Length: 438
Image: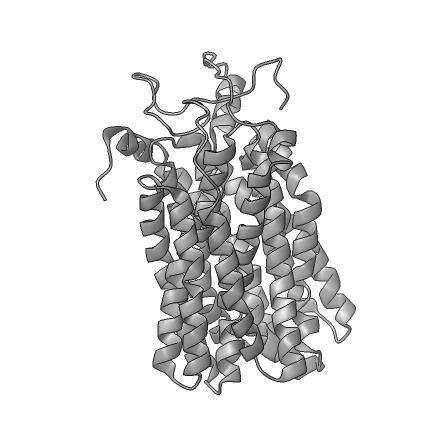
């Protein structure tokens, strides 16, 4: 991966932000990737149905749909740093509270309502908004590196949770998980995480020199939300999560239903996380060089192969491992492609709100997927019908990505269509002109 001088300069200035944002993305992903491991112990102790246990992800989905645009508006106006810090502290607290779950299913629901209401503060739009504001020439690769946090979470979470549950029981496992996340993530966010808007506010508070402000280019909120292109992007993103993310989230129970041991399933599921890192970095590199519609369309089609391997060779660890690797490679380029395509097709003027709506769609798909998947298992005793259903969803999503059309050129301050001006020091803080609606 050979980077130009402007891209190298961006990385030298802002690599710490990418690291902190990646850890934040990992924290965001842990609720989804951990619940599959805890389903068995909770079912064994309380006798709850698997669909009922997994249904709490619907709370995350509803919160993302209802509050996503408002969080995006807050990010556009106040910057992502404060929002990310508050949300991260609350999410770590929610994990600790899960150790207090009682035999009443309502106690489980209540804790997850708190998780949902605070977790919306650390959704992808928070992290991608910060990174996008600081990178122009290497935005695709920076977004890919940021969203590798999801890969880190999908790799470490099943193994860590399985070990803690086996060693200490599920209650102590939740406490250990909360402590681990707090120590790993919170200091990095406090000392390293920022954005162009946060940097400008800090300099202004310290009495620093005023910076030149540029007009933020892109479509308005109304124009973006009502466009056919935005609807296609939303539907394609939903199919991406329904298939790729939910397959990864539920990979452990899927393998266990085929007769594999818990730790074997957790280890194989970790392969998906590792390959996601590779797929994400390759995808990010390609996004800066070829049409992102093609990158996203090819990526969302790859789980077709994974589903067929799981269906045709359910008892083979090797086939399951290959399915996990392919699934991870495809999933790696998907989420960052959606964020990148949002900036390329709609600009940065209303990115927070528009990607907040997309994030709501992704959250709804993340919530509906595990509930539906485990309901199918409760009814049929098998995950096979769901795996067969994934195939046409992949075809639909791939087609929609391929047909998004050409990029729209909003100019230098809206998109990375050109190099930063000489002496500009990279992308500047961008705000709308006084006459332009936010």
